[in-house]
Image (cartoon, rainbow, N blue to C red; front, side, top):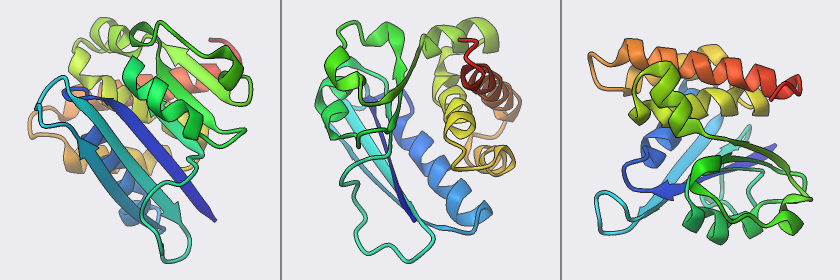
Length: 186
């Protein structure tokens, strides 16, 4: 089994941290192999950012995503650039408010979840910066690739000290939204 996850957005959205947390959850708490890679522009905020996590039950011979099974796309630029790479039948998660121009032809071959994740993080968690953690919870639920317990442990290992409570709230909100999405309620 080899699964590939691509996360794309812009600097400041927590793309890299999200992939590090996912890789840690898989490797440390799920007992599988995981390799995380990243690429980002020279700007610390606002530049393009891309990260990948390759997951396998065997040693990983090539660390890059070739045809992602899953994509989390958080900006229009990431959507335009990476949507065509996603494997037919793959799952994509979109930050609805930041991707106003969508390709319905390409999306027909994918399972698409588009929500205003930044707004949800701001309004329901209390901090828009937790959007990446909220999306991880959503991803864990809809993909089934990592358990809630494993991703929660990895989040608590990875977030700055003193932010555990708000990040846990964001993660749990993501689980809740993912559960609703699986039931077709959103």
